[in-house]
Image (tube, rainbow, N blue to C red):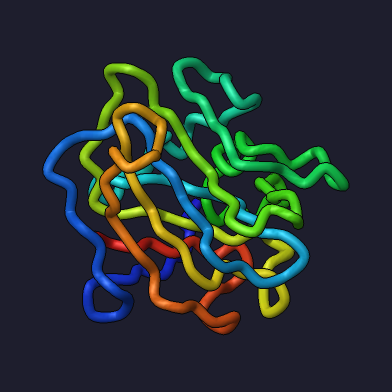
Length: 181
């Protein structure tokens, strides 16, 4: 199945920092979002055009399949069926309504993937796909994307990308966007 994507490079959105080493943990920090809650259908660190975890590896819980571990700062308790692992559960751009939704009271939500020991990568981009219900009323306005080898994200991480301020017209529901470092 072919999936349409936007690809945002150096000339379109603020540049990130190309990493010089490999990392095991990756985190999307949402600094500003608009709508009832932050929603992400898919998040994938990338090396070239390869997504991690792969598009064929669909998570079914926060720790399955092994060795992947998905986590988030929160999830929406009103709609508890949308925990962190769901952002790694479908092929990006599939239009699925499987997604992560943060708790609406979480003002700076984050979403993280642990690829597991021995599965470190040196990313060149990050793919973010808004969910099928997103659009003009629900979208990420500002974010950062970082990597870590401890998973702590308390200052030891490497910042790869800081987004420009993104408007509602930037995002298209279920259309993956690739942000190149």
